[in-house]
Length: 158
Image (cartoon, rainbow, N blue to C red; front, top):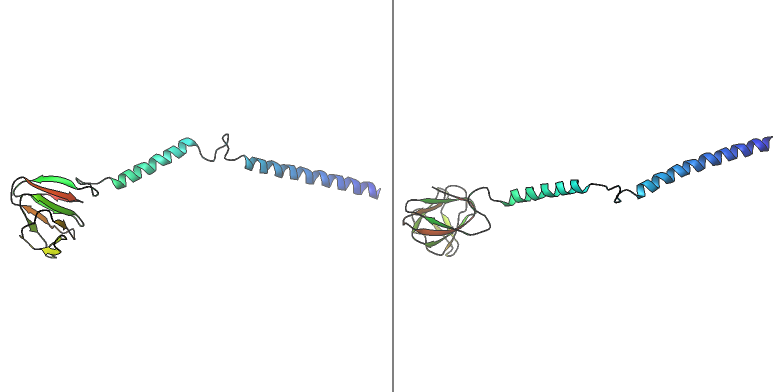
């Protein structure tokens, strides 16, 4: 009798362990199929939506918020009496016409071609690269009609 009871207990234990193992293997096989064509980790429409959001974000960050493109030299025609005020880091090149420097209390305009600082009212030389060092109202005052300048960076015309 004792042997018969041991055999029944051993058989029942084997059945319970075996069924538990089968259930575990069933979970492993379902994990192995995750990410397949029939069960993707993400849907294509979700991925396309996220890609379009990233594209919009990059386009918003790279497009300029005012009338100038910071990566391109822009040709501008100005009239007598107009002022071109650059923001910090704006590059300006006078191509034709005449203009004078408009500076601030903190200093002048950097003429990097000659390596000098242009003072208030000083004549702007043609074909010299000028850089506005700070966003404090520095720029050019146009003193002749049909004055052409090249500008790279942010600016306003008054």
